[in-house]
Length: 309
Image (cartoon, rainbow, N blue to C red):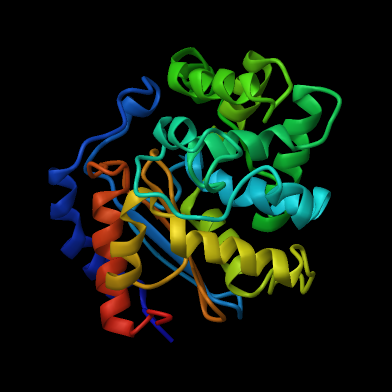
């Protein structure tokens, strides 16, 4: 078993912590700019129910782009693969996650993948429901089931902060709407997407969700197949190819586990068949990934041979 003791994990966190000084919190979203850049914490959940953790693992993390994997799983279950992938592609991109460049240069048939903002907005557009509240609750209920925790909810302050500063995401939506890729009111979609990104939990809950993906959609504690096997497989593949923004290739080579990051500093890792990992380290590198979190995963992957390749 990797990291059998909390002390062992604490030592790895402290080895990675100095790297947080090289990063910067996501202050372009004012509510996220309040985070302490020196924070670094991790939880690892095993299929037998054991959990080891280090750092301030009770601190709440908003999912941000980690939610893209979960919303994708939900709409694949609700709409089916054919419907979803007629509207969003499967290919990685070397561009930043919020870039509009590929939409313009490709003549806009559909966004390249569900992990860039344009693709994620299209996926969120597909969440069924008759109101924003109903659609948010559909997603929150799904995440509560994955985490086996009713504490999961969205942070209203972060959601409002994101809604007020989502100018580039609005531009992406108007571009997509102009070309018929989405057909709902732009501010309504931005409201839903902001609340999706502001869903919050702690590292243990995040590790629990990572474990469900690692175990092919089965929650080990309840024994329930929450996500169909093939949907879990598709999501893990996107985590490998696109999960760490435009650093995904380097991450796959150096670390080699399915993972998804968010600009809050969260990282969800899913080591197939073994463990789920939840990390929080709000200091980000230039690509938007937790700089301490990536170093911590690199140390873990090397020490315990976690790479799937």
